[in-house]
Image 1 (tube, one colour):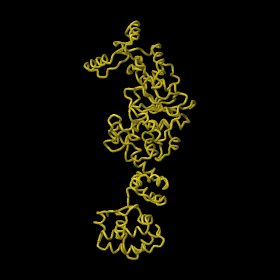
Image 2: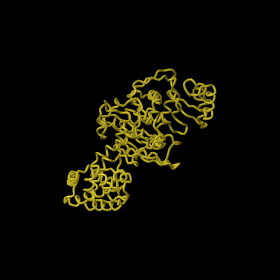
Image 3: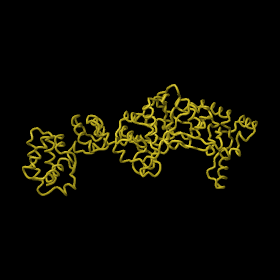
Image 4: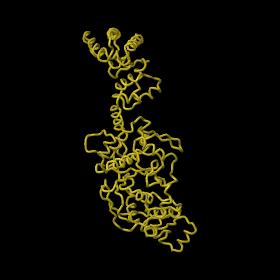
Length: 507
């Protein structure tokens, strides 16, 4: 690519950022970095009626959590700012006027009530999808049907108006999408979109195209839901004389529900018990709280790795990627057209893999806040060994501290294990084992393991005859990590104390 790649993620602060939005930001970021380009963030807040307080900060915080740092944006402006469309308000009017002057735009004075009346009449005539377009505009109240003097008078009177795009009639418009190939649309199917409102605010369509041009955006990578708008944007580039510098388009596949039936929504997450937002979100109006991946205990790098595979495939068996590896391997050619099914279990698997890959030292620091909540404390070396035993059994950090027996003697003994495994001769066998344990001078994992095996062999006991009772008394559980490792960690005195206390309970 000869010119420098510049892409943008342009969310609207009309609510929390859906995981699909994070994926769009991720693909833009990966594409930019793979090609040595720039990743911009632009807040598209022209629709002030749908603006939700706190949503913009939530979006920025979400991107920060997953590590998608913008080269330019509201928090680190470059030479193309401002990066909020509401702060660029005065920038758009001249382009709306340019479209009118060139014949690509026109004033429309139809009131909302008049438009509703036309739509209702169309419905009655079995035409439910009425559009303001190249055919119907001739019957509407606009600068194409009114005299020049009346248009001037209406503008002078301050009559409400919008500026609409004058879409050509019956032309074949061809758009090459980097993911979907050629998209062909007849312009008679494109409605005359509102571009500019009488209150001085542009609509999404005009602001989007003008800002992409002003910010030198080379590639527009966005969700599939914007594909129907692309022909309008292509016409705007032509109308404004920017066809030669029009960006390339790539429309990403939808993220589908787990059953593949329709687009993933917040309701699916609520219903099936998984988050669809990166961070927890509290609705400022209703107070309703929606769960977030961060608060559920997911690592940001696991979340990003999972999102990368919702639509992109490296063409190999490799699934675990660092962000640098994703940057190295990511191309739009390997993004599919078909929707990608979200898999909550696979998402947990990614988190599990990242947890297991962390060092015991890292994990020791991460578990401390959870242990503090439970009132447990331990030395750094104890915690590191504990994390080594627990990390293969956990998906989230919080789960690692579910086993309280590492930090205190069990208050109860597992009733199923007592019923099934505690036999009439078990107490006597454990008393014998206690003597062996007491006589181990260097009470470490290897020595405990060795002496336990010797004890079994010399007495002709099977593993299943001794281990369940031994584990039950020391941990209160029927299953768990290596008993030799557990005993070495909690120490000889504690092991003996728990055996004696447990034997008393079961006599």
